[in-house]
Image (cartoon, rainbow, N blue to C red; front, side, top):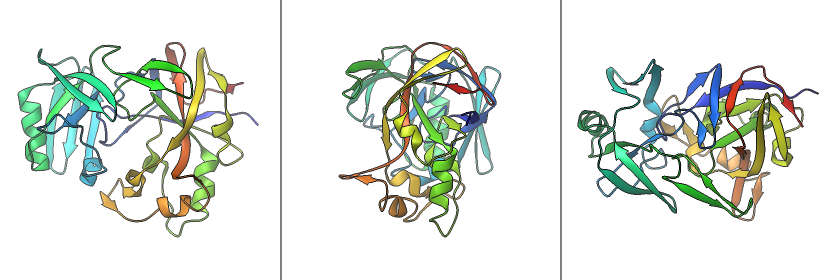
Length: 262
């Protein structure tokens, strides 16, 4: 069977809704404009759907050199290149992350929409956040994603899960960057190094999942699935896995329809 790219997603702002794209530029830190921004609170702690499930109701759109955010009946636009100068030192989990605020009006808009003080910040330079991979025995330059630059999921992994669920779910629950056609559920866990077009990828490790996948992204409501069902057949020690983290070893373009070559 040929493995083919079925869907591609970028998530400009960490924990907000994603954007389905036809093609994307792959870089070491992840797809261009993927999780280069995030929201932080007054203590410079990053904000996610884990504690604010309604973040899934904020919908970004890239229009030229600007990003438009839609939430309910409100819209806000800021420039992709726009930032203030003063560095802010935050963290993404254990990784020190140097970021800068986008602008005061954007932070104000998000603060009013969410009902608490926050700032929208951006990582601007490669190396402003480094992530140590014990599995790969290396240090990676990464974006503001939880750990690794890319998440890959095979189509059969979702099909297999949906056969076990009373209410079917979509791939958006798992926030992948690359969805491929597959034949066997979770076979992507076992991939090593492979090419998509002229890009070379390497598997880092299967992705541990958290309560976020129980948030219905269309409604911003959290229930017990699919984590409960996954725990019955995808649990190893205290971790539940779905999809696999990968890194990109060079830069270039990837498109829907591209084949995986092993």
